Length: 116
Length: 113
Figure (cartoon, one colour):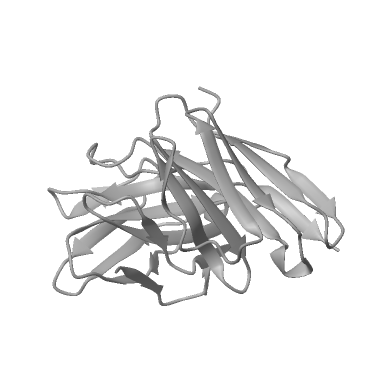
């Protein structure tokens, strides 16, 4: 398996533009997580899905952020409109999910977002 | 709710010296515990995990961690570090039967020659 695949790896955009980050989880993993990493706040859990259903989006900072998982092999995180304070590295991770005793996360390489 | 505290933000150490990275957690329910490592410009990778059973767990590259329930700690140790161990290390906790994994703030290990 190629692991968790994220795109783009780097994105530079201007304030007010829409940003879409993409993630392909590991095949067979039932849970998908979006994290944001910044120097100031560390790793923050934004939202997670189980079997394509959003379970908890309490970490999503504002209504400008939205996430979808239309099928088991694809998820998006959208920011509209983007602001400079959204600059961060966004990680997608997947796991086998609850009940497996695993809860082990496999992370993608991250998408580094810079909003000017 | 769970929380994780990593007591040291940075740990400089000389090559071949021992190291301990400290982690304490808070939870009202039983948990799984993890250490992840992040090398520059990469995602996090699992280093080791405690799910149940023996409280001492080991990684393939010489790290070990011990689950101490009474002290709610899960410190990471290595008897002799290498330059290649330079990275950021994250302690994490997940409620058994739950989905969420919560991470500590990270400890940057810097190994000097």
